[in-house]
Amino acid sequence: MRNLIDIGSKYLKAGDSQKRELISYYNENCVSLVKPSRRYRMKFEDNWCAMFTSVVANKAGLISGQFPFEVSVFEQVKIAKEWGTFSTDLGKVKEGDLIIYDWFTDGTLDHVGIVAEVEGDYLKVLEGNYKNTVAFRFLKRLSPAIHGVIAIEAAPPASGQRIKTLVKKVLQGHYGDGWERKELLGDDYERVQNEVNKILK
Image (cartoon, rainbow, N blue to C red; front, side, top):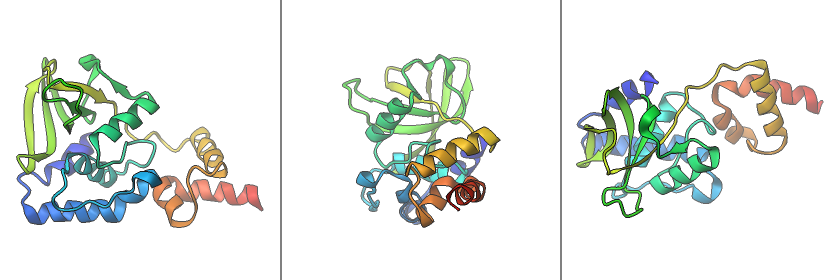
């Protein structure tokens, strides 16, 4: 998942212009990857840590179903729990995973960042909206401020079985149609759509 860190690191020390660029990118490219009831368009004054992770994931080529695209940390965790990718066990945290923070350990999910490095008992985490810019945070893996972790896996190869699964989901209506389907399926779109077309002839 080095690609996530390489892309996100380009925004280190981001100022207002880069923040506006990130917001614009999210609104143009990521909103459609969020479930319809949550398709919120970001504003400059909004908290933007979750938005930052979503933009980085999209630029890295992750698609809906591989990453919890959202502007809300709470909703990212909610999605991850539904997928079975959220855990409070930091023992297996790895580069590219999302760290979820609860600063006051009161159950409020305050912040999210992308794990850049795991070194023994310490983590290096890339975060948007860290002092209103993009920066690295260094902290202990077992810090009480960490609520949990969302495991992010690299996109699996477009195997025949995976394509069959995606085709089935398309036919069940999970990937919409037209441009929405194309955006959601990303690099798999042509192969999946060709198979769908064969079935629907």
